[in-house]
Image 1 (cartoon, rainbow, N blue to C red):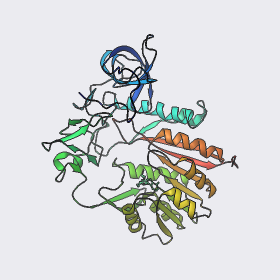
Image 2: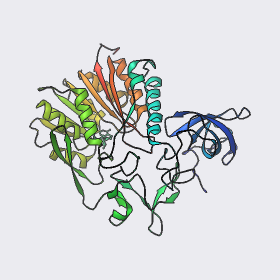
Image 3: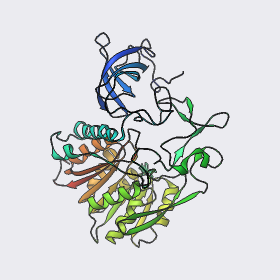
Image 4: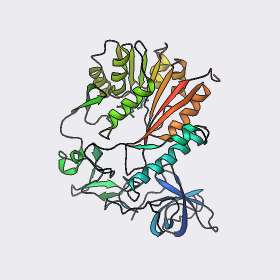
Length: 403
Ligand SMILES: C[S@@+](CC[C@H](N)C(=O)[O-])C[C@H]1O[C@@H](n2cnc3c(N)ncnc32)[C@H](O)[C@@H]1O
């Protein structure tokens, strides 16, 4: 079995890959693994996949040399199992197999508890919030059931990419590796996103170039067009849940001006702009998404779509006050330059939609320097069986800040 060593760096010292150690598994950490400390002689931290806190397991090192501060490994034998451990429903989940899911071996409610622990930890460690604050203690990752399905964490992914083996059979990649693992049916893929439904090569996005989605929030419904290979939330309930949470937290009022940053095809701008009836500017870097956003926002008289990187667009324009901001950046977060441009517009509230709680934590700390406090947060299990989690945070202007 070939495994890729930690990305693009020269190995420092003798490789320890393949060695096995008996360990007691510690807490979950961000990234789909738990922390364990190797026995005294090694005195080293190892991030263990396929384990659960409190278990005793045999861990096999998958990445690590004598010179590394920490190693990675897989639990290849469970000596004392957690009560939360279940048989993985997917036959392709497990050490050395498909790398798509992290938590197939964990009961679905317990997966949410692991993610809750991670979200809270990031808010405290990176967001510098008080671990004892009600906001942190009450943050809990919420289930988002797929209509008509049991709460089993399966068949939710409406878009799924498969790789193709030389014989044309569908495959997925192993964890942190380019190695392909044949997967004839991914159990988290929704019925319409299975290889059998794919057209031609095994990239299942349906057959047309443009997909249409209706999003119903309360009694308001809007239709969205999106390129089949463009960004659209993959959980079928995500657009509704995220829009309704953003609307509830922001509470947009008639006449309030809004920015929708990293807008995609204008999902949030459409709902916010309809509620305010005022100026709404969507900023998005992808040209195709901008084209769709213009069509999707055509019914809003005072909407504009600006195509370009958020940082650059805000550095060179829209130098005016906005009351509301929706911020939905990619995984790396908004980062300092964008956060500072946002606070310069003095919005009363920012709804931050985050697919990485670590990036959210870092950005929350920057907002705090500028007098914006995290006043509410919801977290949703929109990616069952994986370590991923989606948060919606409300940042409210409460002080002058240091700037
Ligand atoms: C998480 S998606 C959110 C899209 C949209 N808010 C939605 O929910 O459908 C992030 C979006 O940011 C866009 N993007 C990534 N980097 C960007 C940048 N530097 N400036 C503007 N848009 C960017 C991507 O093309 C993608 O559409």
